[in-house]
Structures are given as C-alpha cells and as structure tokens.
Length: 160
Image (cartoon, rainbow, N blue to C red):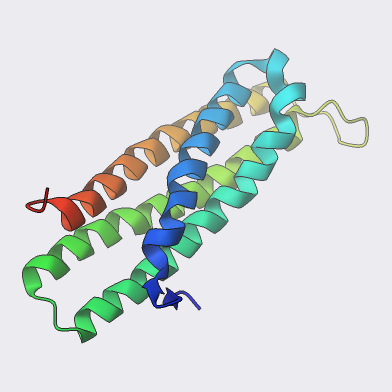
C-alpha cells in the first residue's frame, strides 16, 4: 500500500502532504493558543489540521519505510542508507511530536470552546494547554525542517 503508485515510490509523492500540513498545524495551533478572539473563526480549521497532519505524517513515515526497504533490497550502499536513516530518525520524531501536537490542540479547542454543552474549564487549564501546544508546535517546526533538510540532502547533495 505504501510502496508504489504506477511504478513510482509513494514517499516522494505523499511527503508533500506532511510538508504542507505539519507547518500549517503548528502555525494554526499557535495562533489559536495566542489570539483568543480568532478562536471562533479558525477553530474548525485547526481541528481539521489536528486530524489531517498526523495522518499525513503517518503516511509519509510508512511510505518512507517502504522506500528504505526498496533501497536496501536494490543494494544501495551504506553512505546512502546512512543518510536515509538520519532522515528516517527525524521523520519518526516529527510524526510523534505531530501526533502530540494534534492531541494537545484538540484538547485546547475543547477547553476553549464556548459551546454550552461542554463544561467550562478553569482559565488556568486553558493557559497550561496553550503553553503545551506552543511547545509542541515549536518542536514540530524544528523536526519538519530537520526531516526535510536531511531528505533533500540525501537526494540532491552532489547532484545539482
């Protein structure tokens, strides 16, 4: 499922979902945490991103593992596979931190909602979750950069 589409590796095709959605989730969740007056306008988008970004990161991760298996079976040397392993390590961390950010963002949205069906949370709890969301968002941003940089270097360094 994560190996190839029409003979092409899935990873370079789907990785762009993660490249777009992870930074959007990080940015959207920070804005949601820091600008309370915008919450009613952007809450729906942040919730969708909190669900879609971890899914995109998961698919990128699984397809990357399939590509690594393909490269190993094709006999690529240790120099290339070391670069792939570095990229994979960053990608794994990016996935887990994105999953944490998604969950934390969903909790923050639930705590900050004005929906009368939801019990009102103490203000300090919303503040604590906002700090947690911001911390996760910063770490996700760092790992998206490190993952993308290491992947681009593995593919393009010495080529162009």
